[in-house]
Length: 135
Image (cartoon, rainbow, N blue to C red; front, side, top):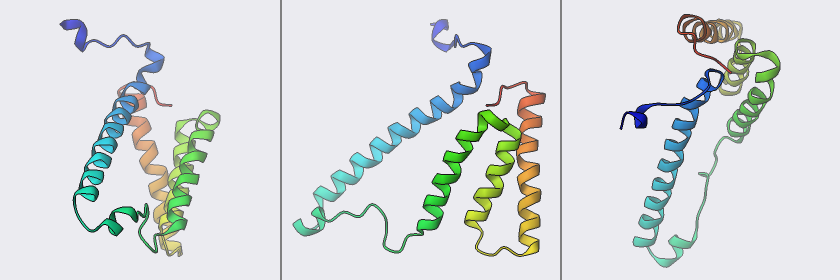
C-alpha cells in the first residue's frame, strides 16, 4: 500500500506531475459537465430547442477569446527559447493588453509592474526557495 503513495519520477520531470494531475481532473470534470448538460437538454423543453445548439453566446468577445488562445500558444512556443522568467513576463504583458480596454500611462505602468513582479515572485519562491524545477 505504501507504493500507492510513492511517485517514481526523475527530478527533471517533477514539474510535469502537477499539470498532468490538474489536466486529468479538468478533463474528467469536462466530461461530467458535458453529460449533465446533455441530459438536461434532452430531458426538458420542446423538440426544436433541443436541436438548436450554440457553443458561444451571441455577441461574445472574439478579440479576447482568440487573443488569449494566441497568447497561450505563443507562451508555450517561447518557453524553451527564453526560459520561464522572461517568457512569463512577456505573457503577462500580452494577456493584460488583450483584457484591458483602456491603455493610458497609469494602466501600462500597472501592467509593467505586475508583469515583472508576479513571475519574479513565482520564480524566486518556487524555483529558488523550494528548488522546484520550472519549465
